Length: 135
Image (cartoon, rainbow, N blue to C red; front, side):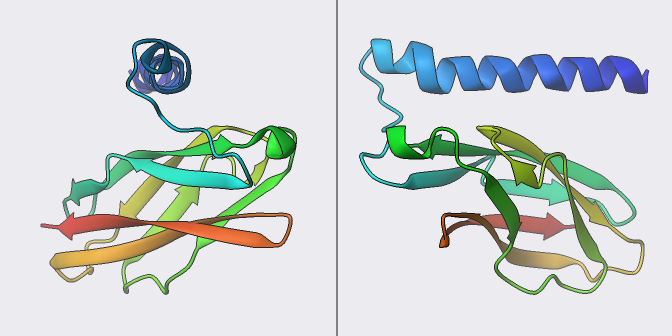
């Protein structure tokens, strides 16, 4: 079952990339590729996770032509609330997207939190805010 979920997630992430960076720009709904440097986005931008559970998001990195082969280092730009941890599928590399799993312990406080996830390439860091609701 877990293998099937991983396969389904991999297919979804590839379709997301294909739609975002290839198909939609052909129909006028542009995911703008930066002229310089890079941009980072999260899908979804808000996630709800139960205590003792986990949830996943996709971080997509849009790269300018000069950054296409640059190694990206992913991390957090904010301290994590107690009881929350992040697991990056690929925290270092040339990937254009990666899965980030948000793991919430049983002892985590319920509430809404803003996490800043960032990407660093060539000594430049950019971030995205992900809203996490713990229930």
